[in-house]
Each structure stands twice: as C-alpha cells, then as structure tokens.
Image 1 (tube, each protein chain N blue to C red):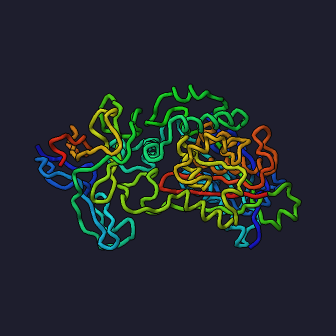
Image 2 (image 1 turned 135 degrees about the horizontal axis):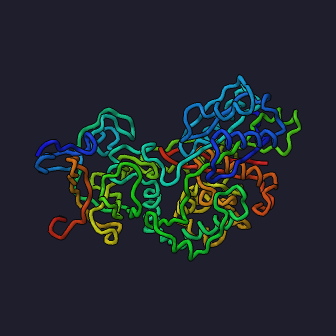
Image 3 (image 1 turned 30 degrees about the horizontal axis):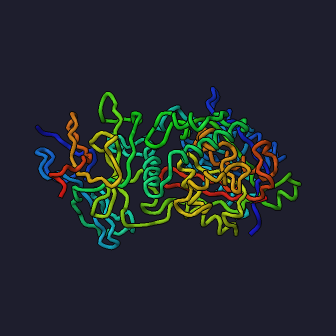
Length: 140
Length: 381
C-alpha cells in the first residue's frame, strides 16, 4: 500500500500510509493569534508572515450543520449512488471552525454535539476527512 | 460633488429563453436608451455586469446598437457584479470624464446548481462542500438555534415574494404558492426547501446614468438620483456564505451587508427608516430574513418578527422585494442588481402598477454573493 495523498496539499499531518496520528494541519498567527486551517505562510486575518504550524485538535463541537439532499455539482467523490449526508461546521478548541462531512445518520446531528476527527481513505488512495460522533469511550 | 442620476431604465424578462446573450442584452440596453430619450451615439462609456458570459461580452452585445469608439468594459464581482458596474459609472461621471454612461447587466446560465469550479477549490468539490444552498442553510440552522426563528417564518418570506411576483411580468415564475405548498416542497439543504430558493436563469437589465446637468439640459423625464452606490468585500471570517477554508471562532467582524449598508446610509445621509422600499438578495428565504437585521430594519434576532407582523409586505412599513425577489425572478447573476435598480426606478417614478409602494421616495437595492462581494445602492427621487 503506497501512494496515499491528501485531498489538498498541506491539509493533513501524520502518517497517511499507516493512519498513525493523522489529523488536520493548521497555522497560528503570532501577531494576531488567529488559528487557520492547513499550512499557511500568511495570516488571512492580518497579513502577517509570522505564522507557526499548529496541529489542530481532533475533538470539536457541531456549531451548525445542514443535510445535503441533492448530489453536489462537479467532481463529488462521496457515496455512489448518492446518499444524503450531513455537512457540519465544527468548532475546534483551537479557535476556528472547520467545514466537513459528518459521518453519521443525518437525523442524529444536533448543534452542540461532540464530534471527533477521522480520516477517510478513498478507493483512489486520496485521504480526505470527516467528523464522527464522539462515543462515550473516546470523548474525554 | 454634483449629483448623478438615472435617466432611463430597461429590462428583458428574467427566465429561460432560446435567445443569445446578445439578443437579450441589446434588448434591455435599447429599452433603457428609449426610456432616457438618449441616442446610442450620445453615450460616452459602457459597463457590462456579468459573471458567466465569456470575455468581451460587453462589446459583443452592445455593438449591436451601432458602431462606437467608446470604452466598453466587462465588470465581475459575483452576485454583486451589477453594483460594481454601477459604481464604475458613478466614478466616470463624478470624475468629469463622462456625462452619459450605459450600465448593462446580462447573463445566460445553465439549469441546476451553479458550476462549482467558479468559486470552490477542487478538494471542497470532492468532499461535497460545493453546494451553495448548503452554506445558506447552515446560517439558517444557527439562527434558528440562537434566536428561535422558525421554518414557518422562513416559509412566510417565500410566500410573500411568490405573491408579489404574480404582478411582475418580468419574473420567471409568476405564481403564488400557499404556505402549505411551500412547507411541503422538498428539502434542498435542511431547513431550506425547493420553493424557498432561487434558480439561476437568463436575463438582462440596463440603466442610462448621467450627470444631473446633462439630465437638466435634455429635460430628462423623472430622473432618479443615485444617493449611494457602495461595493465591498467581506472582512476576514465575516461571511460563511462564501466558501472559506475555515472560519474564526474568535474574530467578530461585521458581515458584508452590515458594513456595506452602513457606508451607503452614511453617504446618502439617510437611515433604514427613511427607505420606503427594498429589493434584496433572497437567494433563499432565510437570507432575506437575515438581511432585515443587517440592513437595520430590526435588531439582531428579530427578523422573524418582522415577517410575522407584515412589515415587509407591499402595504407594510418597509416593503421588501416588491418584484417577487430572486426567488421568483431567478438569479441571472450579472443582471440581478440592475434588475433591482430597474424595479426601484419604477417604484420611485410611481410607475410600478399593482406592485407600487404608495408615495415611495427612497429605495434600496442589495446584493450579496461569492467571495463576500456585497453591493448596496440607494436611489432617491
């Protein structure tokens, strides 16, 4: 097994081949303090170059969500045939909100719910990500 | 600073037509010239607002009106393209370079959800995050959670706009729907339903803009003053209607509608309570509810109350989307703001027929879209 690659360069940290310690890459601006998703050389808030890498927290809470009930346009790589899915804006304790599919039945989702990051390896070897509901054992 | 006025307005109906952009665009431009009583040869510059049409569409469309050596420039700012184009006309006239300018909005768009490659990155498309209504719906969900806004209140806005459209021969759908029909229409992205959402389509609308001096010289019929025309881009993390990599949970910047409207009110020397009629970006019914708050028609969280009390119906204190809004007209992106302006000109001239807001003196048009582009135009008779 080889050739796994992230859905976007600079989006993931960890070992994609083994799945060990895979998580979201982030960046924190030393000037204004804003945390952002992925590798960033400039802060999108204040424009500073004084930005340091940050491994984003795996755990978050659903800040808002919707259920996508029609196949998204373009080169969508989700379930085929299409199944409606929940899309959530997940608030991380690092001070940012990240948009991602929620890996659960759409009717289970509520605002404020605890969720946890999980990578999803596609058949084509591309690694994308989603959030699963935090079960009793994993939520700490 | 001398006044800039609209002296002519024209529109080609919004809908789906077996006609080229050249045909529908030149139709609207000719109608605006005729309304202004101005010859094409008198126009000194033209701006085309468009997003989906190809390069040099302004020249392709407007050369149909006759040979010219004026500058014709295409302007693009997503759903706010029309505001950006009108703003260019304002600058051209205020600078003294021009006295008469044509501003045309035109678009032809395929059916269905908009091509995501225009505004999303590949990874967002692959992960299923490229459906525009998903973003509007997430805002609605959060508003319902924070303020108790209901699905019925959202449906009431669609109901009002569909009702208004019955009197607009330029709307794509001219059909009233009951609240039951709206609430029983299929969910697109929870909680937003099929009959609460606008569709991309074809359309064109145009205005002839002139200096007040020029309007006086030719004895223009009922000129309408542009009291303000402002275009802005959303501040950092201020609008998650536009796809961003991530949103801040700590920065609290005002949204693009709030910022743009505040600037427009200040430049016009007017407040929300002075505005008699509004045309706003109802890409979905919830969006209009939120705009009530952001245009300062009511405090944050009280948009639902406004629709419950009928404040925004024709005959209410602050009518919104007398034309039927984008929900019934469709959204030909480049033409949508000019379509609003054409409606407001008719309202302020007292020529809006069954949609007329009694005694309207001030009107406001608002558009908002991808990239956090927002434009607000305030017109005054």
